[in-house]
Image 1: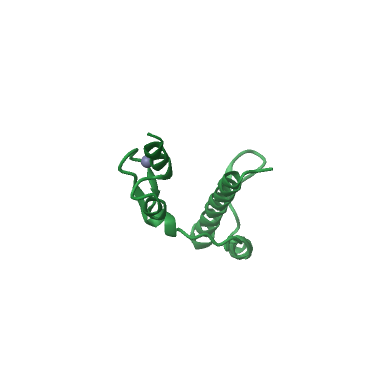
Image 2: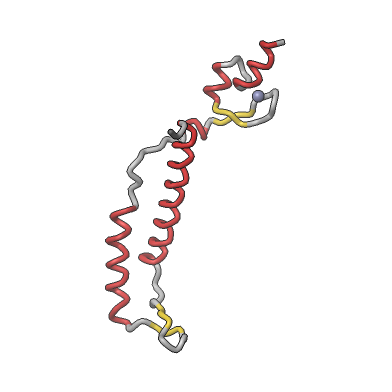
Length: 113
Ligand SMILES: [Zn+2]
């Protein structure tokens, strides 16, 4: 059974993968150049002019199907990330507030002494 952290990592990787593909498809749909293909002799040739529109249309349909990532993720805690004054690592402001201005690890270290 995956831990919550592993699940979040997997989700973030999937989101990144999705962002990359959407970015690449957008470059195709927003591009103006003719598409090129490699023919059987290994030469790079222009796709016939008429086909370019059809290819962009197909890619636009694909883009519309995948551009909305099905899981909503908020950047809220990332945006207000702050440094723990003890270990100088970044934590959410929420965590620092909870443990009196330091991260949970430093808070526990302090309270063990
Ligand atoms: Zn710390």
